[in-house]
Image (cartoon, rainbow, N blue to C red; front, side, top):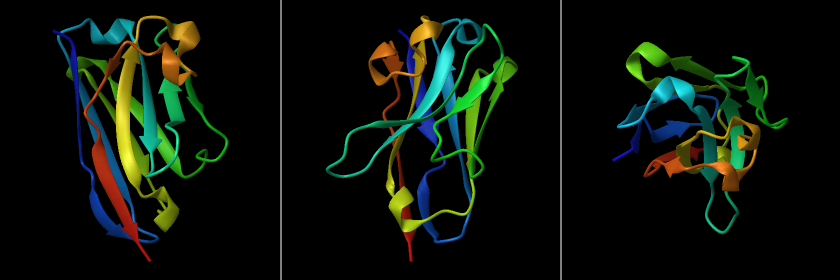
Length: 124
């Protein structure tokens, strides 16, 4: 059974940094596009970044580019999300997801597998 397991969430102060990890289990990781998403209380899930295995590029939503950096290690079946200059409004549950349909990797609905999420709380 395919699984994604996130880790690394926690509580940080504004201006701090944190790195999230996401391990893929039970599927051929390097063939899948992987995305990072987040969902704050009362808000819709939003895309942060995605990495497509086809072109090897990483895409970011405009509001995250420059502050968040996604990286990928296929040998470890792991993706990372480095988050810098954190703000209280970054408080949310962060999810990773995988899709075999890389052309849908910029849409929430395009993903086949989702992790359980990891909570980030940023205090002012």
